[in-house]
Length: 394
Image (cartoon, rainbow, N blue to C red):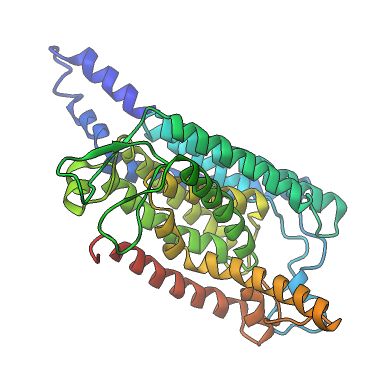
C-alpha cells in the first residue's frame, strides 16, 4: 500500500516544486527498506496489541483449563508453574500483525496473495481446533483426519495453481549454456548440489503438498513449551528472508547459481513481517508465558514457512533450516510406530522416548523448561547456519 501511494505521489509531483521535497519517497522502491519497515511495523503492532489481545482472550475465557499432557502421570518437577488458565489462540496476534504489515509494505503479487491465503486458511483451521479444545476442556479438538483433509486440500490448490501459474523461474542447468525457464513446482534444488533437478509436474505437485502439510504439522508439534515454537520459527524465517532476497535478485541469483524467481523479492517483505510479528509475540510467550499461540498460530506459521520454501524451489533447505521441527515430528512418528508395532508383536506397547514430542522427553529426564527451549534454540541456530552454507558449499 505504501509503495503504491509513494509512486502516485512521485508521479504527481514530477515537474513541480514538490518533486524535491517528495524525492525521499523513492526509498519505498527498495525491498530492503520496505522489509525493514514491515519488520518494525509488525513488532510495534504486536507490542501494542499484545496486552489488549490477552485481556480480550481472558474476557472470553479462551484459556487452557484442561491439564497439560506433559504434566500427567505424577509430579513433574520441571513444570514450576501451573499453566492452566493461560489464554490460548494467541496466534491471532501473529496473523493479524503479519497480514497488516505485509499488506502495508509489500507490492501486491500472486506470490504474496498465495502466502497470505495459506496463512489465513490455516489460521482459521487452527482457530476452530483451539475453540473445540476450549469448549470441550479435554484437550481434544478437531479430529486429526479432518485437519489433514483441510491441509491437503489447501496444499493441492496451491500446488496446482503454481503448476499453471504464469510466474516462472530462470534456471541454470548443466547441459545448457543458456538459462532455462520453468514453472514453480517442476524444479527442485538439492542442498550442496550445484544444479537444479527437473522433477516433473506430478512429482513437483506432490512435493509441494508434502512440504506445506509437513511443515504446518511439524511446527504444530513443536509448540509445547513457552517460546519454543515461535523462537525456532524466528530463526528459520530469517534464513528464508535471506534466501528470498537472493532468489528475487537476478544478479545475486545468477552469481550464486540459484533459481531466479520473478517477484520473489516481495516474499522478503513477507518474511520480515513474519519475523517482526514473531518477535513481538515472543515478548508475551517467553517463560512464563502470558499467552499461547495455539493451533491458530502454529499451523499457520508452519504453512507460511512451507509455502515460502516452495515458491523459491528450496523445500529441502527447509528440512535443514527447520531441523528442530523435523526432529520433533520424527520423534512422534517413531514413538507411535514403535508402540503400535511392539503391541502387535508382544501384546505390550513399548516406547522409544519417555514422551513425544521429544521436548517432553527431555523434560521427563529432569531438564527445566527454559533449558530445553534454549538448547533447542542453539540447535535451530546451527541448522540455520548449515542451511545458509548451502548457497556456497556445493
